[in-house]
Length: 374
Image (cartoon, rainbow, N blue to C red; front, side, top):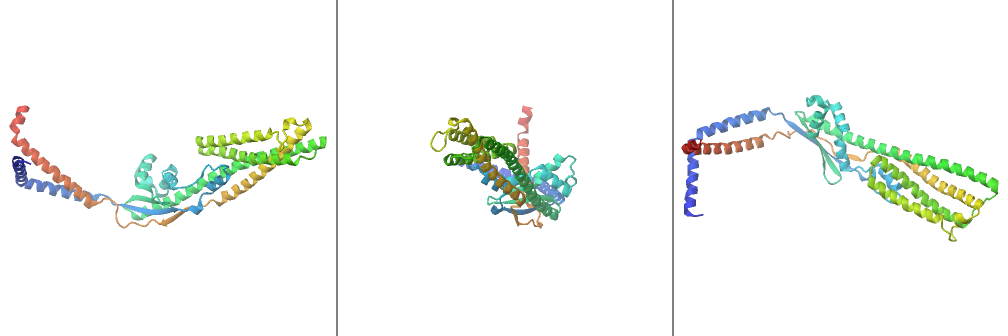
């Protein structure tokens, strides 16, 4: 900095200090007035209290639908019904949760809202569910003037999150059990029809036995049919309940691959399986009937076990939440932070007042120039 600039800077500072000294009464009046008004307003502002609770998601209590689908999937498509932090955060932001809060605590009267959408908005602003990234999450709620009510609302939210999760898991388990039951009934009906057809065929033709090698090959086809059925159940379930087109396409590709393998085995002319088309008419009919029954028995037994497991798991669904830190009644208000607000207000008051007296002096010193411009 040159000597001239330094002198100019010192001169400007001295000029500014003279302005402050000359207007100190005005400045002090502004500061005292603004300070008093700010303190009065801050004292009149309502106190808001924040209650919090920490919840952990237990690994050992994964939802039953998740376990069922993992076991049932023939090629591991991942978990269904798995409740993680994001899932509970989503449940907290549902109208079902908001409606239960409104009904329990009469929040439409508390917030003095005319429309339910406005009450939803008030709840949204005061409720928070935070992911702690360690398989725990924190529920918090802000409530005006009543710390006990803040704690009660947090406790209620925890209970409703648990309840909604159980309702969803039970609905998914029930839907899945219904799918298995429908397939089981369908396969059982077809099996009974095939057994009746075979009985009539044997009575008419006298053919009673099937080659050991051919029977072994049909056992392999039955295993593939069982996998195919399980995939079809899974596809229909995913398609209707989850509407996941990518997952459905993956399942359909797997079904197509298994169907192609079954077709290849049925048309195989090796020593293991005699091709159906090359047998005499009666032998081919017998082979088809026997094959259908063996496959039906395998699939029916598989579906029966799955159905019984689905019934059991539907009854076993339980909570996988644990309240680590229950909501406590807050003793210290969360807002308004009066000291901080007062400091900020006074800082900007000082800044703006100094700018004002400088601008006023500048206008006074250059009033003639401004008049000429006008």
